[in-house]
Length: 462
Image 1 (cartoon, rainbow, N blue to C red):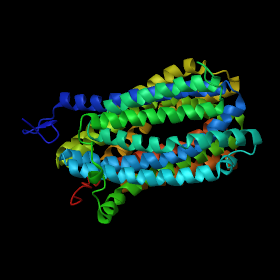
Image 2 (image 1 turned 90 degrees about the vertical axis):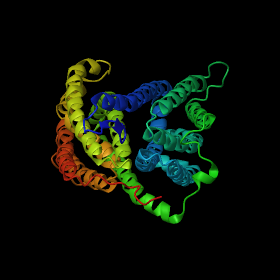
Image 3 (image 1 turned 45 degrees about the vertical axis):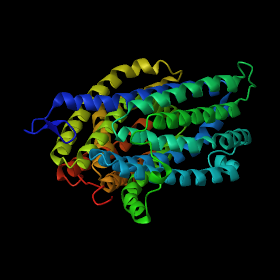
Image 4 (image 1 turned 90 degrees about the horizontal axis):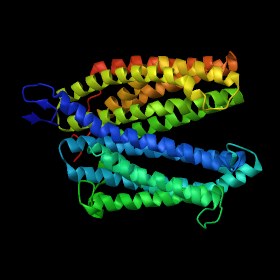
């Protein structure tokens, strides 16, 4: 007879088949969703690229604002997911719906701030990244239209993370897939003026995004309330929280939010550093990121499953099972990282043939890719521990401090020193930035072994 979350018997024997079944059920849909998203985003970029360099630059720069908005939404959604996963361990539907209400209310507030700023000063936002008049005009027009999609994006993010936290990764995957294909279709129709529609160019890409997000939200809401389940909350249930409840919830949400915002800002700094190093450096890093992102799809699925399963077991007060999950997922992360790193190294020369670049860029890119492949298992281990074990275990503050320290006191300073003080080539500058991952892995191991990451954040919250 099984107890807790159903993976450990009363005799203490660990049920491996049940473990892998749960893991794959949670991880595979996330992997597929991320892969389809990456693939269709590449198609979207290709479509916009046919309009010329100005168009692709305008959309890319306008999406930097969206990227910053996404950091808020991912942090907020992930923070709520910590609570929902633990509440689901005891099947506390009432508090799951209250957390969902906190998340949706907070999302509306964040959206309002970004939309007001975007509508009032679209040109000033674009001018933060460029001073070319044509790009500013096209980018501002795109931004003003696409801002409408922010509210729908926020709602779907909150629900997607909530679905995963209660063990349902398939539903958000299917809904997002519909939206992504919808986006690609309307991009084709509205950008180029197909099927009798006007050729709207960059504005057409923005309208297509808005249509896709609206469709995604409508399908989502219908799917939630068509067959009333855990997330089918009434307005009264969604707003059944008080200030004290919100205060306690935000004690965990804020570290997750700050973690993702700091990561996003550091990513922008890295991009700025490589941008100042010249076109070849930018091209090399862009290609490396494009290639490695294809392999990271598997990692994000695995880390999502880790967070949910550990959160559920802690919520059910099965701490021995939580430790067993952490041990198995950390080992699985290292094994997966070694395999993916090997595949990345083998595939790199062939994948590079897709890109029409100079011999110098090709050489730099290959060196960087091999370096990434060499320590890929460390990167995977870090993601599993921080996003999966620490956050899933309720140790959001520990995850934030650990990642924030290594990123801002090791990764960013070494990258800046390598580029501007020592004037190193791009592959050595990138290599210096990887010391962040090595230090992070050591700190992750220390935090994991301390056992202090196990925190039931739902205790006395109800």
